[in-house]
Length: 291
Image (cartoon, rainbow, N blue to C red; front, side):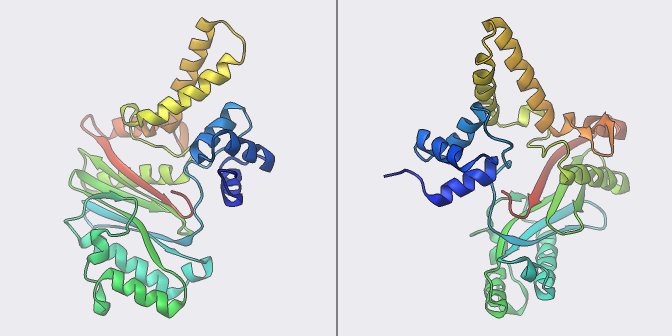
């Protein structure tokens, strides 16, 4: 019996843009393990570009709120089953109120990637009782499942800025340290706009030291197998792999990325120009349909 389903094949095709038979072969070789199958396809040079974290069958809206003084900010993703409901006025008002509630919740700090069972759902929310109760009520009224998927609240280090694309499908929250007021908020917003654009790619960390070791190890394995297949001497292969790893770091490290508005400057140049004590503390980027 196959260790995978037709749904697994479909998901792998979405993530890699590879052909159906190649996806089946990859899942067979990897005993149905999705992540290993993605890696197998990349090693074979078959994958034409993996979605960074896979697709999720959902619609919805992303809203950001920043305090007037720029000292704190909030980012919320509320999901629905269809885009039609995501554009519903009641749905839009609800996600706006959730963002306001989160911004006012000083006890919440950081990014929550799965809101299920989180403190925000237990927060008081209008006449319905808790936020969880209100979402259940909205689900019954609209006739679609309405889910608070994830959220982030930053503050306490300097200034927070946010940027949400006009379609409400992708947005970013950024916190900078060592700079406050309008200047700090503008820098954070500028960086948030860059991250939201996802050009040249979506960053996974602020600095190189923050890039997950497991992710680097995976890329190094892929590069090693690809370089070894070239038949070049071992010392040349080692240099090829290190060059690819260095390039990977530059692509996924926020500070190393060329600024989307002027690629003659890196994001670190913007930060450096703001002052010697200024740094980017953290960021959260949400996109509807992606993890």
